[in-house]
Length: 421
Ligand code: DSN
Image 1: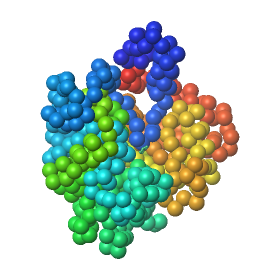
Image 2 (image 1 turned 60 degrees about the vertical axis):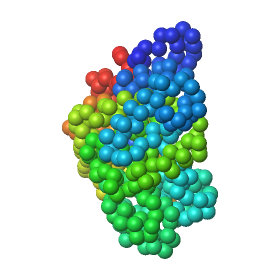
Image 3 (image 1 turned 120 degrees about the vertical axis):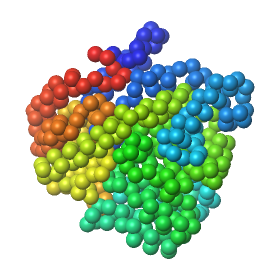
Image 4 (image 1 turned 180 degrees about the vertical axis):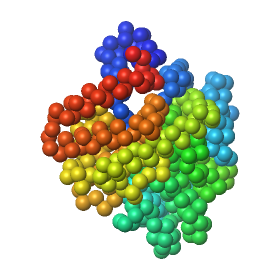
């Protein structure tokens, strides 16, 4: 059952309580490879379920528009100070509701509608809010996009430099949602300096790796850093904007009153707890473990003939192109889910198929590492993935069911935070 227990909820709203229990059980019964998800600790869960949700606190500590901020000011200040210390930055804003609003705040702070901005194209691994056409950021600004090269699957920094020189963007975003390789922050910084652009490092996916020393930090290279708090950083769903002092004030004004009303104080509390956890030595082991698991899984998949975009991984993320397996990303993801492996279908660079039925699947090791799985189990996981992907192509339901039974046996040995058997 769910931990902490939801006994009051069960009495007051059995229908909803049942859904919460069902979701907790579903999470427990899956090998979660969704690269942007994780399991928060029970302490984070408790913090996000507190009376802090009752309080409005528009403004910032010491400058609020409502009375009664004696405690909330301390909660937010604690989160800010922990963020500053963990990431070694001069300024932190912990109020953005999530990653997209955090990125919008950057636009509001440093660009005008119609300005040219630059980001990685979504199909190459970028994020919607880095100027993709269907996003407000692609409609209200003039986006120019870099991608990856076909041969290497990696960002070509010469191409980025040429594009920046030609287009003179106000903002340059680096980072994204499906990048299996180390982001070259110094190279991006050099380009941004040359064209007088503000470099924004969106580290949503790798924030926990940066905090844990398993990925280079953008600090000192990007004056503005955005991140969600719920991926490798293992906090509640939320976001932060980190910056140097020079850019901090404009960002604060953009978050509030520019874009948002009152911050979600229960979430801020959860972020504070997660930041404290991430500052512990164990978290460095965790971050290293995430990368070690991803590398081991990548190798095991390659040995089984899978094609990895960029040929491998440096972080928590693996992008598989299933073209050579003669099955689309979507049917493969659906079959894997049935077998107990949860992930998402994903476009691959230069994908000839449509985003709703693309060629790839995206895998991440943040959640399974939290759960306690280690590198020696990755060949077994790759084996299951191979069997199910082949079965998805041939409609072999019996194999999928057999794998499901094997996975269920394994997971019984690995507790999930937030669930007690
Ligand atoms: N939805 C997130 C992800 O899965 O990467 C990005 O916003």
